[in-house]
Image: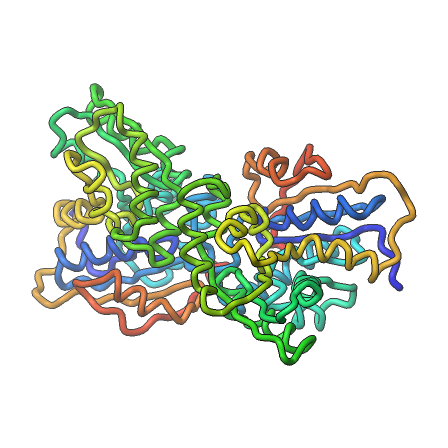
Length: 266
Length: 266
């Protein structure tokens, strides 16, 4: 089992902070480097080729920071280029898909499972493919929800009537499918869990970050420490709002400072 | 007066097509090069420094195509970096702000003028500054409307209840201001004109592309031709959906083919 001291985590922007939060809540003593590609967000509406090019640069930056392993805290990157990244880089790389799919199959009785995500994530078919590998008889249905990330990033919360109406619109695609579990295939979506549950109260919604944070303990030999994990934050666009937004996303840890990376150089 | 044969037009993505459409509707015989930076869209949520870096690359690409002048068909770029670009490049550069502000002052009786735009556009204060230069006694009020572009780009039209509720939310900021004219400070917004007018029926909404297309005739010596203008389309992310989306945006011309540019090289 690989031992893990310095963990790299990256996302197209801020959504990955929900994964980071779960990792730090459930794992002590880690030294974490978080990179949010705020200059090139969002990835979810881009083509697989562009997403892969960006993800390669994100990986190279984290490697330059001396990490032992990388968590891809982004549904879009995990869905579109995990195999390409695993081929190119020799250190362990963990995406959110496996953890999300395993958690969904563990709680689903009917094995009728939905996936919600960005356009690129859903079109990749990666979640459905993995679910069928793990459980060939599973029924799966993916639904593109491209407006959720802009809503969340612009301060529309789960209680807002505009959010609620948008959630109703997108989730109505599941009316006939009778799924009992839906994977929130984008790391932003846990912010809207309450709105999702109001529209489909009988469905269980899977938070991939939570699933992944438990998976890390099984896959790696983690520091034997009770000290809180420490995080260094990097972004590609030094938006002065990063820290205040980050602290809205985080409750297990705090973000006090952030550094800027010129990601085009990697 | 500069003569103009080959005109460059650029935008962060697709919104500039509304400006291109107006230019081609009102000006014959032009040879136009359109660049949409689809790999790095949206600019509106980025910092001024990043926007300026991107705009410089966009300019350099258009220069490599041999254009005589450039129209910045993007409210965000016009608002954040027109002076910097004019300093660096010697060819004529026309932004949407001057045309929009002049058109607004021409139709406004009360000289109480609103501006709606992306976060970066409104925070730049560029429209308000220009309006005050042209008319020191003008009252101005800018309102950030960050959800309009994602709504339009994801197919929510002016009739959609979610669009209408969002328009009501943002435009309610004008309730107390009693403006009689509002500049649509983002080139995407003309798609929502009908929804805007429903919420504020007494207000005149200014389409910057329309204003700019007339301004070109005053500023340049244009080809004496009745042949339709011809456009070559370039994008930075070869999203196969570009042509179909473009043809939804265009009615004065057609888009039949598109080429890909690696904009990082410029």
